Image 1 (cartoon, rainbow, N blue to C red):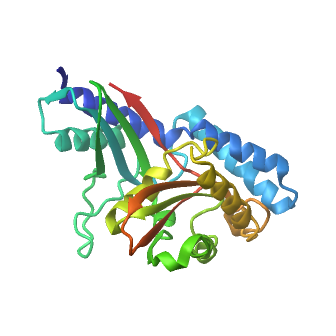
Image 2: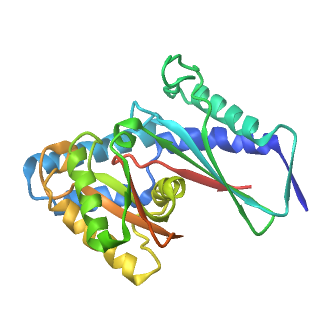
Image 3: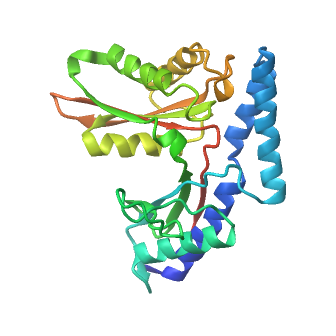
Length: 280
């Protein structure tokens, strides 16, 4: 049994909050550059160049890529042979978010109550997801999620008779309805299966997979490629100005489900699909 003190978790979360908000993952950065090279529509090409320049300035100056520094979504894969000492783990994570958003001069966007709307002033509490895995390490991923894109996300309880065509239509319709609102080019996380709550979490988790890594199942790999083509044919384009680059990637994850159900969730992310990880 390995012991990890909660201070290590706090320190890791603090650093990841700052890093994730200032540095685009390489897969997103490379995809933006490739889209710029492939784009023919002048306005779209110019917009992509501005997004690339913005990312470069953010990383070199260590400032936020976007003014919406998001809700801190924190994912932990905890080895079953780990014992955490010190603070309660939720408190340790939230302390890391508090320190990271303060030290990184990141916008605090969380309200304590959804109706009364009083800001907590430190961007806590985080949205925390735990997964237990074999081993004696903890993998922590911080994925700040802005709500311009989060608000465009949807879940639908399809019937098995709707089949794969119903799934495709729901994904395409969700992106079409979102239009320019989520600051495209988007990254689309899709969950299929499970139940109402599991499928939403699955779609969010899909956004953590690099967009240049496909689903290991050939059927879903082909579906990811097909949906990316269909979405880019919508012509929404970068920031909604038109062009061939509406989405940078489509990541699909699946779970077993009930014989009477076909849950589907689409979690839309903007071109600033931020996440940073470490292992302790």
